[in-house]
Length: 528
Image (cartoon, rainbow, N blue to C red; front, side, top):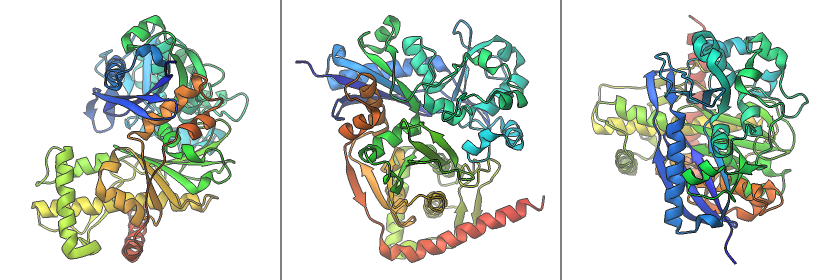
């Protein structure tokens, strides 16, 4: 009897990844293909959605080849992606989101901050929808970006007939279905999935988007995560190297898929899952906290109903620049350079050597606030700026290492700030489940335990986000009766790191300074 297999697809900021999995969650093959991103300004970032689709197809074909399996055995596939906005016309052709009018650039990347003013305008409405996004509209969500598009690129708006979150775009390319995931609509489009109707049309009219339903071809209801959408179309099956017997499940935003892959072992008991925090950390960092009831928290996105698991509430915090911040430090410092994996590891090794002499007090008078791209959580302030205190005239390699180390400390303290905020609102988080690029950085993995005081678990699976999408595919293909059952059956466990008790005093001091610097920055901003 042939084995039933699954494919998970994860589209991040810089690449598309695909993995082939068994129904028990074992990864058989993985592949990755880069995607293009254009930056014309610090606040502008754009993708080419056709380039992304081709990258997905290449990654899936390569993963199947590495797994050395028959495409006919693959019965389910799921797509996750960053919360980027794809714009098409009524015939499905690309529509530009770029000021230079090139239709190729039809996708506003999640990290694009062109709509800062529009986000502020949404917040000032005081509408009910704000109660389910932490009280503050972020420029990384779709509504302010749509407002900007309508106001600044009127020709694009007039041509538009289909607008989708990137994960839903991939499902559409794969099946032709206009179904939208409960993950994407609830988290980024102000759709209230716990009420009927979900769309708050008075809010959309207030911000000038009364025609959004028509322009974006929006459905009246969302599709639960993991629900079967449709089989692959013949054209998509050929492009992906699969067959039309393969069904597509409703996907998620990429970080939410990581939450499935890391927290799957605990989905059987939602009453205790609030001790566990998923930290999906790469270019940016997202923290995912699940609970049985809604817990509104100022400055933390959500509570979102059914955005990860049907019937379960999600609070989502995050840091808009973490891996991107460390890359920026390398480019910015005289002794740095292009931020390759080799350079990051070289710096980590030198920091370990310096710490062998100076211990945790290494560069202890150097302090960083990591909000170089705003503070997503828990302040909800997209205008927040980064701060470095304690610089000297040193510009050699060791000075770069000291700044890198203290930037890593700041990133970990930012996570502590978020989880302590969550713990004042009903959570009891004592365990962090970390996945993403930061697992390759030994400094960050150490700091996530020592600076927060939490146990840190690194999943045993090679890619927890892809595993989360394989769980979605398994549910859609009816290999398991529900998404939570798929998660429990396919979870792979992990290795735990306890915090170092001897480090607590140093990082408690650093955290007090971190909070003091936040207060000082707010005081300075108030003087404008």
